Length: 279
Image 1 (cartoon, rainbow, N blue to C red):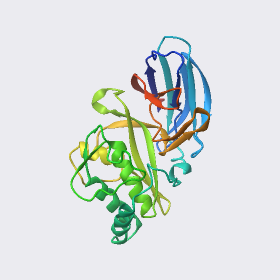
Image 2: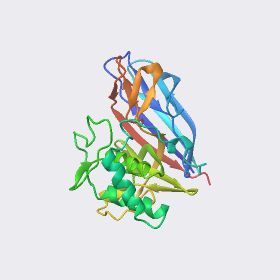
Image 3: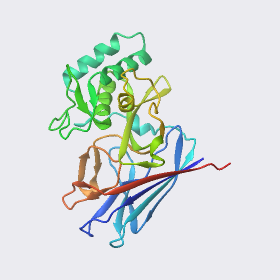
């Protein structure tokens, strides 16, 4: 089985800008086998905290760019680097969150039960939404949410979950990519993210946001309570690209324009997926 993902990027008004694009990462389900750019010249640039490489694309002109990913079914697993804790303002847990995570984990009978309890506890904190103001905006650490429901997207929910898991001493990774809902026939509107844990050699995947979208807070490990398929393009939070003067950027997923001051600007995208059965 081959999965092709094409991201078409509308030209920017400033035709001198470059586009930063993740190049894909393996999972247990898929491995990226090719990455191609049409409509521009591509070079690679390194992310200094995780070792990931991204494409830096210079458009040829005023025509749309086309980013093409190809994935083969079956993969070696998530990169080890995704599980490595790196402290920054997107991953550093506030002290009250550390205490809460440790208390939740210590009350369980073992490591896997503790991970499940921390996932459930994070799910109880959020109502799925896309708020303009994020729960951790302006904070140098991930704050503890004590009571009530906080509005949050998949990014917000998984930020809280990663901080909780790592505060309790568990290996956890933050994965970004695209999710294609079954009902949209190979289309999606933007990026998606999920969390993976690794304990005693067992890797489990968690997607709280999709459980909340399906109307349940009883979170099971696994990726698709909401029917559809996904691909992974990058991992981790708080990314730095020294050659681009980008320091501690929250994440890398969709292609973004690199502004002269090192800030990033969303691009206008069309995202499509096709699947080929090689048999």
